[in-house]
Amino acid sequence: MDECYRTLARAKWPRGTDSRELLFYWLMQSELVPFLCSMTSNVPCKARRYERISLPKGMSVAWYGGGDSQVSPVKTLGGGGLFLATSAVRPVGTSLTLLFEVPGGFVQAQGVVRSVRPGEGMGLEFTDVGPQARALLESLLKRLLQ
Image 1 (spheres, rainbow, N blue to C red):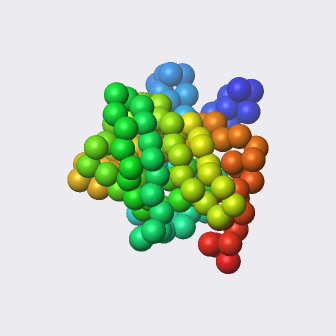
Image 2: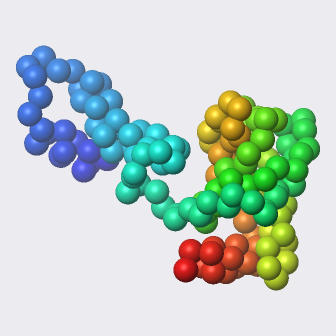
């Protein structure tokens, strides 16, 4: 937090700018903008932690939670999550359990809905992936990203 205040103190602000406005501006620049940028695939953004791969056909995920269970095709996959092509989207913040097969076994993971695109699907962030499942997922991604 000290770095935040030092950054704010060095900036040139219009006279009369209140400290809450400064903090909001700093949060917009350092946290919110990269977060929003990471939620959309159309914006080239360096804030993404994991590279993603497009999977136009082939892989499906069984998921349940939010009062529903479905099997949906995966549109994109990365180390941090995936985008499911489905009309049965769940609200942002909904926790889901995911199960999908990869070479070498099955990946079971917990995820949370981070974005919804009506008519297209929903983006999920992995929130809990066991070590064995994480190794299988990383192995698959390494192969696909070569």
